[in-house]
Image (cartoon, rainbow, N blue to C red; front, top):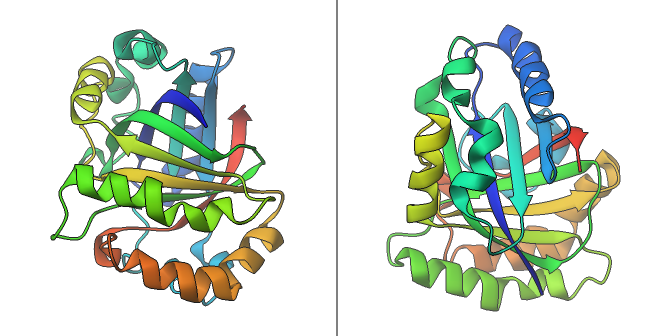
Length: 228
């Protein structure tokens, strides 16, 4: 399995009008940075009636994502260097209380990439500590992705120490999420069909109850604006 070091900044705009300039600033800031990508949120309604699409309540917490990945041995401050001081640069555009840093190892369970992404910031159930959550997620639940040879599926596991280092560089707070699941699709129709399939809407969702607190987690559609 491919394993990469990754920084992912989850950003909430102050208003709908602030989203476009925020995304534009992020795209400019990361232009030419190896391993960087900027994604913009799509309307959650495209997820249809899937149970995952209703997780977390009506208000989506993220309007844009900027991420940088590198080799597993990359230092966190080095990986974050292109985003140094970003918090100050975007302060007028974001609600900083709803922004957060996720940093850790990203496990490419099923390698592959596409322009439409389902990014899912996840919070564990109270019965599990973070290590137990991440172990079950990667070694048990990930089998739902492994069964589909066409899947493009990754897990980014939050590392508290790494997130703190990246937060110090970027000026943005560490996120309380335990990680993000990421799945990639060629278009919105493929994403909606996958979420509506019995394997995901019924079987995977039932298994998620064992380790994900859906009231404090989100399943969010994005489109890639720039980068890999």
